Image 1: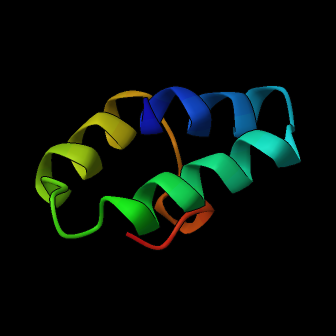
Image 2: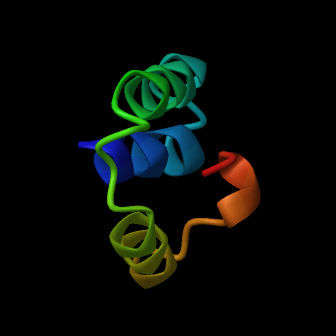
Length: 53
């Protein structure tokens, strides 16, 4: 879900989706597999500077 929101943030320039991604990461920060998230972001060509993970 986070990667989906980041894709919308990047490709649709949707501020709402950028904010949703930030909220999801904040809420689930203690449960996230950060290495997997970084891998998926790389696969989707999402810049890691879009979001601090």
